[in-house]
Amino acid sequence: MTQSKPRQVTCPSCKKQSEYSAENPFRPFCSERCRLIDLGGWASESYRVPVENDPFDESVPPHLS
Ligand SMILES: [Zn+2]
Image 1 (cartoon, rainbow, N blue to C red):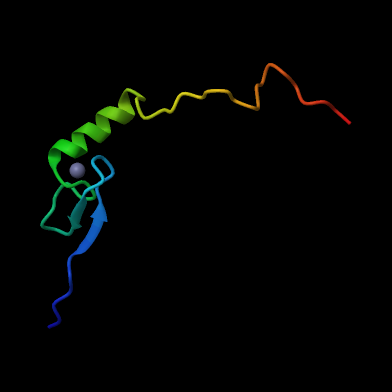
Image 2 (image 1 turned 90 degrees about the horizontal axis):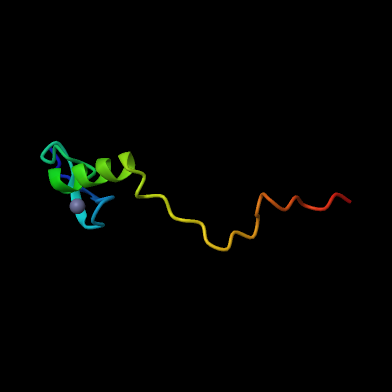
């Protein structure tokens, strides 16, 4: 039987390395806290990055050549 290193993944919430294994029920998150933070973030759409100075302003249609 070979011993394999537990796979490490980056926690999507806090960016820490967490263990991706059956030992970690919150994978790919490092903890329940991070998992809840991430789910809450998506639910409230706080993950959305506000668009600033969008060069492709839809109110200005591109010129047709
Ligand atoms: Zn985390």
